[in-house]
Length: 630
Image (cartoon, rainbow, N blue to C red; front, side, top):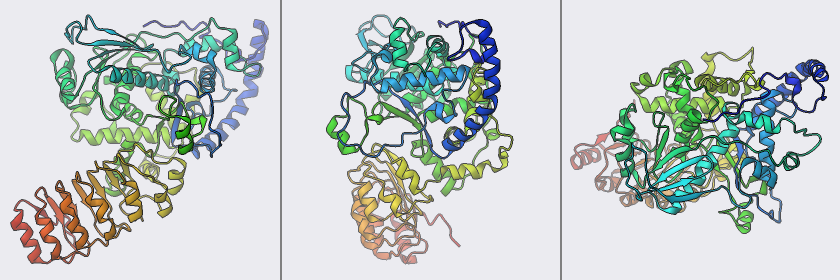
């Protein structure tokens, strides 16, 4: 991989920015500047930490989409998009060395968002399109694929080469998506990125108090960001083709035994990612994150493999955190009319976010912590090399806890925790980040690890203010607010979610109207939990519309026999919780007809022993009353 030699690698911090020209003057200025800033930065940094800690639960970055020419006529309230990566660490125009490079890089992206063509040219972006994509007929595939000439296409972007057996539209969409992921990754993990030196050299002479970054780049039009070699991706047409490919000995060598059951795979041996088209970009984001940390960081060639680190939880956790990547509306998919209807401002077009309370992974973690009361793992609990982790007794729980831990470290508002996590990442990939003072932030009165589980519980807790600031996205597939501090006002702010597969509003005041609105148009709900909520029998029609429902929890609500009678429209139900409901033996006939029912709890209901016996006779294998209440 081609590497830029940093010409000013050992430069004094005072040589950054607008400084005198002679060497002697520069050295003297460095001494004075350093003494002036040493105290000032502590004060400013502390204030920034306080503001960021209370302002964000996600990171906002820029996408390479061309800016809209015309903004909307009306000016709705500005959306809260999250903190930029530099803002989250308190980095400003007065920062030094690597931090200043990072700040300058983000200024380039800000100017891209306002349509500055000089900034797009410096980044290597086309002026009218989001990214350059070329497609040609495939001739010779890598040995591990053994594909015949003409049986695939080669899709190239500035940073990726995709060997695809998908149709043209799918291949191009994947190319666009991986470029988006790449650019967001460079913004979030700039200190580890191999391109950071090129940024420092190209922007080192820019003086922000003299000119804007676009003006500077326009005057220095010969300067541009240098790209490294392309990263290789294999895109298969479907799940069967994917599993067949990754299970072959030439691909699976050295990989986990369960790799064929995965939805995406990055081989550090082959330096290649493998995917197939799916409903969302979570798996793509996960594996591309692995790939970029392995291939696009400023790591030595002979660095220790990331699989050998005792912090392997972070290798997987950071990729799981990046699954929460969400692209805002872009020019290709949103016209001016829909922008008005959605009350989106021009500022949100071309933005992406990573993290947030509504991230899919956090919904499961929230249930496990707040409802199931499963212990929250500490970093010490999670540590271990890859081979040891793969022998973990509950690998799924380990992954869930690792991803939760990264969300907490990155998104809880603690600059100290975020900096510590970045230092751990740098150590894993053997990247020198001593030039970044923001990553050295430590707190002398940092709370002990013994109190961490309570703090993670609080991090998972959602309230009305959070929902109002960061509304649930319309394409959400899972939502768990069970046990959270959400009032009727909070639920009223949750809109229609037609793609949901799981909704859990247990132990909150969610009512019939809320359920009806949220599930309007939803047909794929498989799990619905409304335990101890404000629902009434009137919600029966909405529940009956969920033909794919497999688990339903209506415990401790006022549902009646009439509602249970509607469940005949849900023949796939396997688990049914009716504990504490005022139902009677009139419901038994309907329950007998649920042929797939495996578990039901009828304790504290008005169902008699005779009714229970009828159920046992109709379904001999049924697990009845598993809760065993006293």
